[in-house]
Length: 423
Image (tube, rainbow, N blue to C red; front, side, top):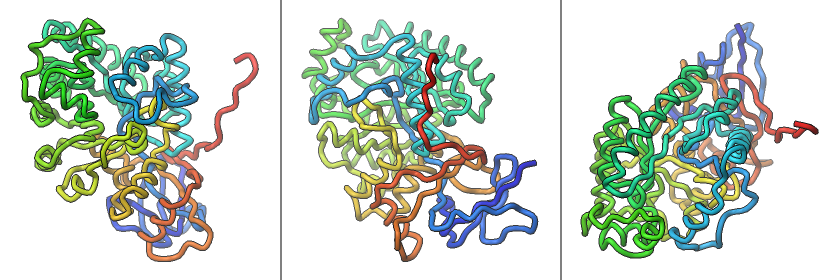
């Protein structure tokens, strides 16, 4: 048996109040006790002036773009135009596997111990991620025309069977599955409903990009605009798919049947839509991607309103196609800078427990007895003083990277992997 006790200036369990001069006891990869006392005979490591928080949870990512050196397009680029460029630059084959591997390594170095990935076709890269973050692979599906719904669903179900083998070999503590009808401008209502049924049969989560741009709202309401042009260019347009006068709320209703639904971006959700999400907060979560939101120059995000209504909000990085890196800590810091009125502990919850709850992964996202010992140490700025929430605020105002990371009680390196000659 392996035993370990970590002591920090403040332990933030997230699922419980913070503990000053707190300790976390770990045995065989799991947390056995959280408090101030350490039993005799336990080896104790004092982390000093640090905050010990749960491993970070990235609730939305596209790892296939992780090899990009810079974001695609200019700041403020319209989403349909950006998608054209994404289609041109999307990697294939070995380049995809290399990018996924790079993204998994980067995520771990940033303290992300659980990650929700929009999965397209590549499996070998995920299979190689034995030492990577815990994964939820959301099998993506695209099929806008009504005629495509049946074949698209069949393809997803066949793909899930293939991924079942991967999940069984890696273990359910390492990898789980979900489905992702991509967005209203690429997935018909018929396809979305069918995939929700597929998810329900598996008790798996569903991820859907929704209310991401003004152009999407125009397509739903009027059946025209830049997305209609893009769909025609791609040979995908079907004028009968979307009823005129549709809105994001129509798609939220489709998601209410799912065991767990992640509404990704939600940049243009109005008050009635957010109120609807709040009514279904037990099974529906909003994924906010702060730096991607800034890159596209969307209107101010409705974060305070969503939280006030009781919507579960978690954080995602989207991808390096719209973001400089895959750090959830950086997303937390940007959210804190943009919304200083939001309690810093609520920001921490968005980057940890809320993401775990959205993904229905009970053993991660919090420092609690019985949970996996996935944790991150954040160094306090020199001279930081005050109550726990004030110390957390000082870390969110700082720019230091995560200092130390544990996954299942095993400490991981925060240094980039070294490429060896001939490898």
